[in-house]
Length: 165
Image (tube, rainbow, N blue to C red; front, top):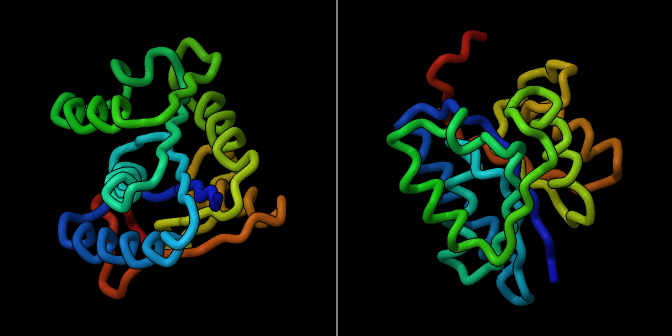
């Protein structure tokens, strides 16, 4: 079984979601010959797109929730139905032992995400790590340091909504 963890930007521009979804589908389809398992924290954006494509291909989804209050504190009201549906479709859900969402909880969730992963799929624009451990670039750096193969997906023309270069 191949276990693929995902990290990616939350603030994807609307026109980027179609090409990113297509890229995720193509990358994940390459692993369909064997059993496919994926791990996601179900953050808005790349994490949810990955989870949807994984499930559509018959993969096994494992969800890692960063904190006990993550759903109430972080998930936007209009994203709740999607979050709940993906969480409910998961084969297993791990809630990290943090009461409140925040940098420490995100960093710990990303460490857990990478444990035992064969690959990390990063929906990432190549921005530099913040050094806080919870962001996309930080997770890519941690995966590379741990020897986990990293596949980067950032289709031409993709951009983030609030990102300033």
